[in-house]
Length: 299
Ligand SMILES: C[S@@+](CC[C@H](N)C(=O)[O-])C[C@H]1O[C@@H](n2cnc3c(N)ncnc32)[C@H](O)[C@@H]1O
Picture 1 (tube, protein in one colour):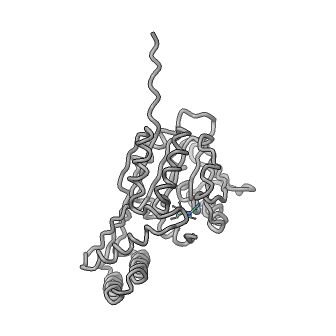
Picture 2 (cartoon, helix red, strand yellow; picture 1 turned 180 degrees about the vertical axis):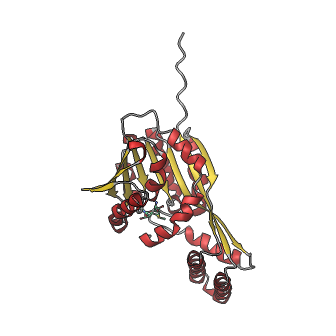
Picture 3 (cartoon, rainbow, N blue to C red; picture 1 turned 45 degrees about the horizontal axis):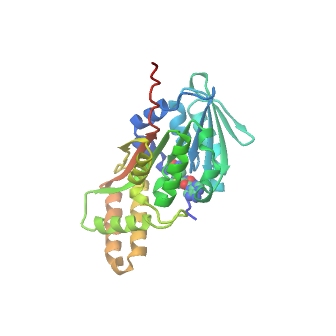
């Protein structure tokens, strides 16, 4: 099983927030009508501790009912506290529900969040996409396989609902200043991303174009935009995490070049200590919707 801890989700959250495409988020919000109920119903797949809800709810000036799905019981157990802390920090009233959280949002709106533990690899189709006005997911699709994406596309298109899939890695990593072994390290990282994370061989950086292809083939209109992390030289903790993670993966997958990996890590750690390293990690956002119904032509 693939483990993501709440501390890591918190550390990456400011980079995710800054990277998201405001244009695609606005398009998604605009596509949520026409409403089939007074309250908008949204489904977030692989929700972790609720980052997508926190990013999107304030952009939707409407009452909202969110269902946040993940297979990780530990993350889901943390989710209500994370949302309540966030709400209070933003000056919003909130209360715990038996199975979630209610936030008193902007302009008198009310946002309810409920959670469900579900293994999306096996049980995606147990969710009724048509029961929601829109489907979201963030920082998830690079974990899944081509076969699972095809299932996701079929499930989604049958509902006709719009989707916003944000912050999927696209394989670009730009270390500045560049050094000769960046390609060695980054290639190892990309190969590692292609491992099985519970869905079959992962698409990693190919996930956004693959989903775009599946959805276009089924008639959806698809738009994508870059959503890159830009890690500045003064965030040593984040840079060290990225350096160490990349070096660990490279050492594990290429023991024959352990000496070069060791030297790369030492150089990069030294640069971090002197605030002399920055990193861009490429991600992509995707928004897709069913084609607009053609106007009825009356004789
Ligand atoms: C990188 S985290 C992103 C979490 C959250 N969307 C965010 O941006 O903070 C990937 C998430 O996918 C979830 N996940 C991985 N495999 C899953 C599966 N088979 N079913 C449901 N969730 C899964 C993990 O538990 C984790 O919460």
